[in-house]
Image (cartoon, rainbow, N blue to C red; front, side):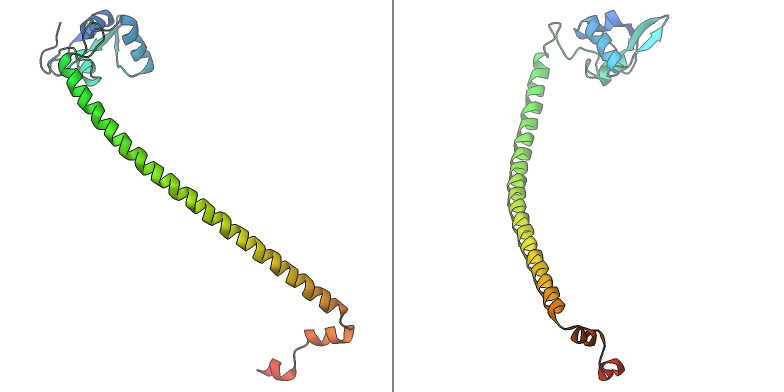
Length: 158
């Protein structure tokens, strides 16, 4: 039942499941999820062998990539192990980089909190100084307060 070369045949869902070593129900679920493209012919679902190759269930020679027990074949196990090991090493490196970024983020958050507290203290001091200035101006006689709004003739000309 193996496909030959680039020639793509249509297999019934049952035949495709038998060929790749999976249950018909498992292939049907893949089709329902949309991860396996199927064609409906005479009301029955059929799977092109090219689709089985595309999804990795068959190799390019048309041989199943998994045994009938659902386990990868020996050759695929070694390749899969190498791929998984490489992926694991990549993830470890990414994890280390993310931990470093997390540490830097914590430091920056502390600096931000310190700066925010400093700004709040400065704003509170400014508010206090403005309140004291307003209070001092309120205690001045009205005729002195009138003079402060007028500009002197020498200042207006310049």
